[in-house]
Length: 230
Image (cartoon, rainbow, N blue to C red; front, side, top):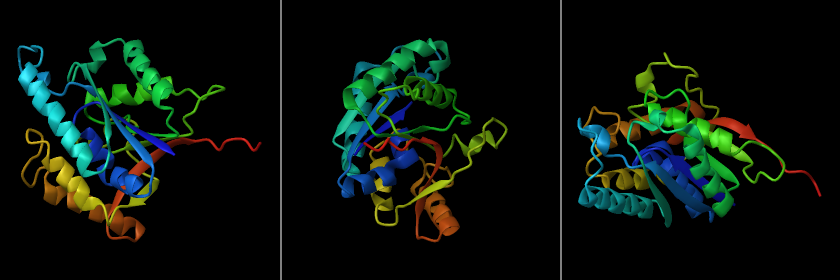
């Protein structure tokens, strides 16, 4: 089974499904991370291109974070940070199509459409467009995840609201997610920020309490297609 996680920014892959990715790796699944945005220039009012050394450092952090959850393959692109709505959607779709064609994933995890962050919504739509269920499409399942400090900060005023209906018990792998997030030196925050270790544990424990386990990550099933019987 091949799993592809497609996100907008470095750290989204950890925040959205880091513990689930770690569990999938433990189960012997092949997991890939694809980060489409450069994740830096939105902090600069001049919208300058990211400094080479800063981008290299962030890429190193992305690889280190992936290693913490056991993911060995990370694809890094450099679409403009928090400006994906200025990029023709077709260009983003083509990147996703190339990933799907090359990696042939059975399952994709990606952003929820109703997030506050505009890039997340663009990635969600690009994934749906690139994986249209035509004959020969290899992707059988698509799941949308929440990203702390983006999904809940929409306060359910953006549609669709996040309504999870699939939950993964990550009691054994939650600390791998916390360790992976700590690799992102520029992205981690102190409590009570949603990206703090304390908040990430609380979110997982809350979803765990909803479904009767110690800790869980929550997902919204976008679609699931059972292959035909031969």
